[in-house]
Image (cartoon, rainbow, N blue to C red; front, side, top):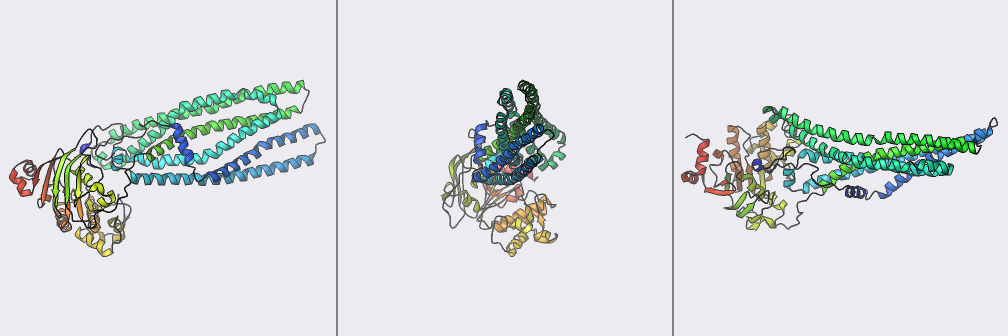
Length: 609
């Protein structure tokens, strides 16, 4: 987008690359904890049966571990009662049962772990796919107003956090809850009185856990937000590393990064400090309970003159330890789940962003002539600030139209409206008499070939980069386009020629990248063309060569050329001079010079007569 309309830029947020540059960042919208939990549960849809099966395995595995101490208790009672006449056969029998139970528990636990790992990976895969699909449905203004790094953080960090937490926490939670319930039942079976002593401490434990969770949740959410913020800054600084270095902006960039990094540190530190309080507090309460149980148990054993009750006390303490450990696990899991919900909120927030309307419209133009008409077009990126004011112009088929004007005049914005990257506020744009509002965006964009000032290449062969978006091309067509763009000789001099793998960071010059994108527009063979400073990155000699090629390409095609160097558009059929979103002068180069107006002033400022 045209960077000439950036206003109200927040210094606290990484800027997007659009017209407004208003990096909204994450976390400005109010969060809804319950809604996010519901959305997380809904993400299990289609996996319910397998999840229930995995949880059943977890319950069965846990049940074996719960019953085992009671069998050990029976072995202990046989030893205490038998004295020197211990029944080794029965003890061996109990031993075999214990080995089988522990073995089955391990197998069931392993199987449910595999199932949960598969499900969590599937859910992570689904969220990544949903986010990518969502990206393709979002309007351009979303990317203008949001940092790329923050969006990437949602795809990577937040989805990874969500998937890992689901894998680790769900089955562990079920196992811990089962262990807690089973331990309580077994304690009641062993000694209701001792159980009553322990139960008195439960409300205290639960109250403390709820208090800590409530206090720490906001910091876990803040931690995820700052993580997205810091990713945005890293992406922004890394992609513009050369600019940062040239303008000696390292110190400023470092200070900005350190500030965000410090916020991330503080949020993470507070979250971990609060959640870390759970374990020592639970340990302290648990140890107090052990003391109380031992004292009461000793009193019962002495009062009833029952030495075997000592075995019951040991078994009871074993179940108590299990109970307390699982309460601690639940406390730790609650910290993990808070990170999960915080990550989930950011994912769901992104997936709920307003989408561009999915249009299902029939094709309106079977044969494109190339007449374009702007009728009283008004537009503003913000509703309260109009940029294009009542713009009207009529372009005939085959004309080369140059759009010139000072920075911020609305040149690129005009092209964005023509391509339906944005919809106009009022007025209309007609192509061959048909309003672009009546066409699908896909059809409108298929009518134009486009070469931008900012080049874009993806990782792939040169041939794949040139044929991007166009199917059915032959090698001859691709090579012919490259010859027109004066890049064929350079390509053939490279290792593997057209099959050489390149990417956005390929070790070729900016001018050569521009030539490749021009060749890409040539093979597209669209009925109309848009050139946004297409020769700005090449030297004068190459520029002349490209101009010759572009003249051939633009022959009999309606072409829109955005230019700052007025020497490149002297042969245009129509020049539109924009100022503040309005056409102030229009005509041919010679006609505008004779007016001796703003165009003449602009042209003469570039050339000394």
